[in-house]
Length: 386
Ligand code: FAD
Image (cartoon, rainbow, N blue to C red; front, side, top):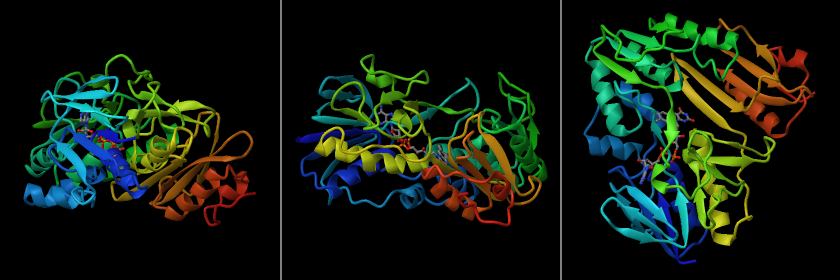
């Protein structure tokens, strides 16, 4: 094994490169990324970067960058260069360069779904443009009351900017959470003075606003790979629990991959969150270096969001077959919701301002612990197995 090529200069790509060297790989590493910058952290783009005062680009993006010395690690970095085609053993870039590899890691992440109007938020440059709009003082519109829509609405209200959020479904995050939870979240918008309009799909720029942010989700960036790869319906690359695609020697990790989860009945799941992009490379690299089968990627999914002054954290995965148990009052500043499967096993926890529930829940979900529903409902008691 002499040459590893990592395509996609985001978090999953960076951690792959770092882990290759940490685990002793001494061959050539080429790291290709379409953005001009070295890999940086994306979550602050819809949080601190929007509310910050703004500094020189290089300084600000430098502060967001992951600390890693590419020169010392002898990584051939090609930032600002996009992969445009794949053939067995070779990836071509937009400048016509052909990069040969023994193992290929695809970490090209997601790109925002666009609606033909308005702007989207994925990159540092997007965030800087959005910050100028938010601070411009003119009313703005957001399409989509999902995680990013809520965080941007928070930043707009913090800046005193009027904001209308148009949500196609009947409440925020209707595809993810049951009605009581979505309705409680809708209340947060109202308390912050954000005008949330549900059951209100839009197909053009909402009138009366100066600027529209479209935040209706993201799709995996895989089109450049061509036809040889098996994909899920959403375009993500189907990979095994070892993160290998159907093409031997080609792996995928981070937002771009739908991995086979043993924990969730062998289904392929795509997790578009930071923690997955951090953990994926740790399992991926042993499979690249020591042979497929060396490690399994199957974490309990975790993510967080900071919105309307609240820390919202979710761990696990629940389905509509699971029973929801509330801890606390949904109208209060802090509460949690737990989901128990028909056997009483804890499958997921949503914690709002209750980090201890999250930490204990994470351990219990990982252990598939059985909980007593009546005790779970007592918010004064710690979460423990029955
Ligand atoms: P990405 O970060 O998308 O990186 C992929 C990189 O590959 C990009 O730089 C892209 O330009 C590059 N690329 C794409 N195509 C090509 C190509 N053909 N050739 C070369 N390079 C290419 N998660 C949380 O858990 N909590 C949060 O609070 C949270 N907040 C977020 C806020 C925002 C605004 C965004 C956008 C995401 C947020 N996330 C959050 C999600 C988290 O940031 C992602 O899950 C994570 O960035 C995924 O990492 P990745 O490396 O797989 O993909």
